[in-house]
Length: 316
Ligand code: 5GP
Ligand code: MN
Image (cartoon, rainbow, N blue to C red; front, side, top):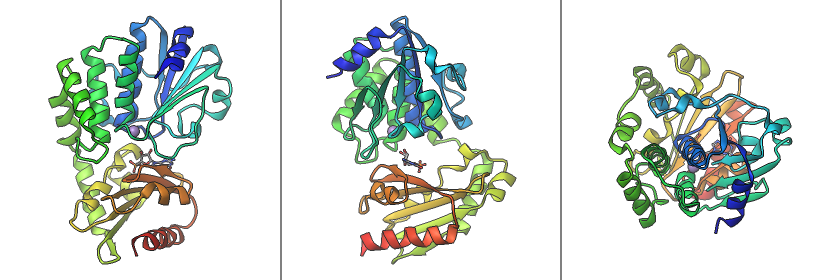
């Protein structure tokens, strides 16, 4: 099943792995699990990780990552959890220098890249897919690898709540816990710990909430100055959308935040009635049916109305 990828890995002496910008738990989990697995094969392996939230700082050896490397000096680039090469943390110029590229992803809609592509939209997370690949390669799983894969699967399934969680997902997770995944601590640090500034961001998000279409759609916007004055980094200003979606009767939740460069990041969550990946693609973004996003570069009000119209057309 992973024979071609196995060949690519076997033939490479030097490998670098990267994930999508604004990396979430799955992007980080899949990348580091693969990093530690390839180290066991005695590969010269490196991670290039874009700026990540400091909520992940507690993870073992997370700081080994580099900001950039000379891509032409390495035999293989692995792109993790990124539906498009433009979303990975290497520039187009560097990407073009890559000798061989292996794409590992689980997004429904993608713009496939690379010499070998493993894209499995029915698998919960890239981390679960990495588990399958590592198992295929017969690489023993230690507690650190298990922790990273557990973290990726847990975050991408909303703690095993979302419909992408299969019986097999649970079997994989059971195996990871058997192999020493630090599950209790990971859940405490990621699900049960919040910075005070983020609590104030939540307050702002709720204050600014607008409700549309018989309360099926909840929208909120927080501007960059507010985020900045709370002392929150870009990566820390995320995670508000779920709170809006949790209100009973909500089909779609939208959280928009202002960015330093004057653009706006749109983050959407659905309860299943609306396929948000289709909506996001209309605005040059992407994602999953229940979690998708895109960036607005023009006027926010105009873009907001376009988005609400697109959603209205689907829910009516
Ligand atoms: P989030 O709301 O957490 O930022 O993103 C949810 C999902 O949508 C993620 O799986 C992510 O891959 C996807 N996504 C978010 N923003 C973008 C974007 O600008 N472009 C693409 N292609 N996907 C995005
Ligand atoms: Mn993912």
